[in-house]
Amino acid sequence: MNLRDAAAIHPFPGIAQLEWLAGQMRGAAVRESTKCLSQLAGLFQDQSAYQASDPQSIVYRVQWCEPVSQGTEGGLFWGVTHIEPGRVGEEYFMTHGHFHQERDRSEFYGCVKGEGILLLKNERQSWHESMRAGSLHYIPGLAAHRVINTGDVPLVFWACWPSDAGHDYGPITTDGLGLRVLRGDTGPCVVAVPVPARDTQ
Ligand SMILES: [Fe+2]
Image 1: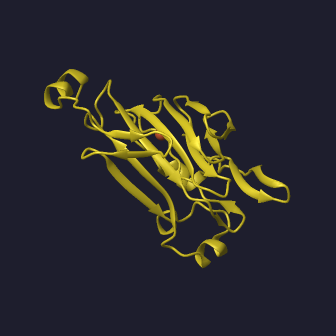
Image 2: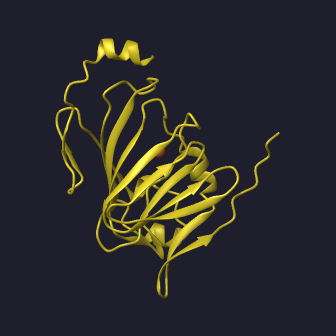
């Protein structure tokens, strides 16, 4: 579906009320999703600690709105994520992370409050950016992205992404992003981890 067809179906009404500093969205069109530890199997480094953790512990919550249907070319989605403070072993709570299904689609993250790290990875390299109140992050196309809460309070950030971006969680689940964020003696540490080699034939 292209944007002209979508506009004929959806009248683009005022779709949500935002509480900017709280990171909350309200309105009938607002969707919500919650991820608990049981839904993040295989992501954390310390599997013994993961098995010993409460599987019902909430790791993050997402609210978002879709003024056009998923897959529409030329539209935008808007949302907010709250990542709870916590760890599995020495590894901080984090989002699952994903590539976009349409790999070249970009995204903005804007941090409202809390402290964290944005991990990114493309075909050539992995890198990271610090997130704090007011920080704006441009996630370029072709880059996988994951957010880690390294603080003692929820990390909250707004996001805006193309309606035809989609999400591809598979490569992150199997390969990670080449970096992990662990608690160190003096605070959070970003450590390099090997990414499995893939046969590209
Ligand atoms: Fe994304």
